[in-house]
Image (cartoon, rainbow, N blue to C red; front, side, top):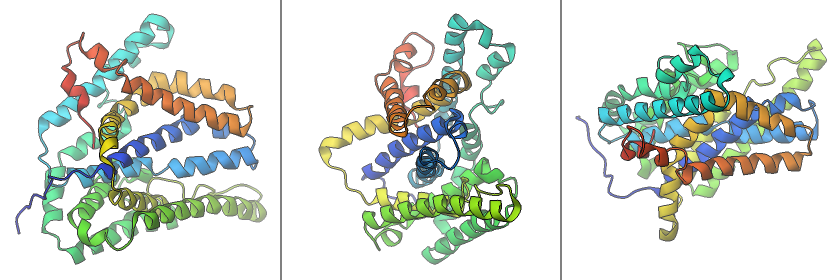
Length: 360
């Protein structure tokens, strides 16, 4: 059986909504992690647990993005100009931010910083994009593999991927084939294949339950992940006197995080979006990659996200939550208004249409 291109005439706006949600999840996850908020609050307090619940709810954002890449990418024509355009966009962000910092905080910009800005992929400035860059050249071949697999073997392949690269490594706490707990090209490729299989078999894989069912499954899996942390902490302290493996289920390749992300994919793929909201959703969805590049730029991550939020650690939990939400909205608004990218692109060498390309 040869490669079969699927019908792409009808757009699934639910997946565009999921892309927006995934980026918000990634933003919150990075703010809580890179911002050092969780590490700075007192352990085993209500405030700490609220932050951990929020972080776990957001942990699957990266997996969701990779699943969307497969769901959207399967059946597409993978043109080299697309990945080149994305690479140019990445370089634009690193160079622009480095230039701005050199004007207002020159002491923070070193020769190494400049080299990283010029060669962001080689220096792995954005680990996700570096992995995606390598995966891009494998996409046509993964599409061919998916196209020749029937429905039964597709389900078996998904189960096999989950067991070999998620359940077993998590259960026995070991790394397999450079998986690196999900920070790798291998993991993104596996998620791409899973997403592509769901796209190919969407009529049979997705019609069994409605979107509410999958939404509740996601929330239940997040609760299981959070409860596992609490239980493991208490048991390990009682048995050994120290905390061991309390983040056992908190990783990109964790079964609960992975299956929860798949549940979100199934949930949003079944959501019908009204006509009046579609233009806004498309606009925000197209901004997702730019938001990622902006908030994950090393200088911004270390000197903005990594410092500003620490000043709010001593505040109440509700106040801190509001600060985080407003910050996410603020970053989205900056990109949405095109102040940072599209506005400057008209004065620099990059053509504006390059900045509209998406990573998934």
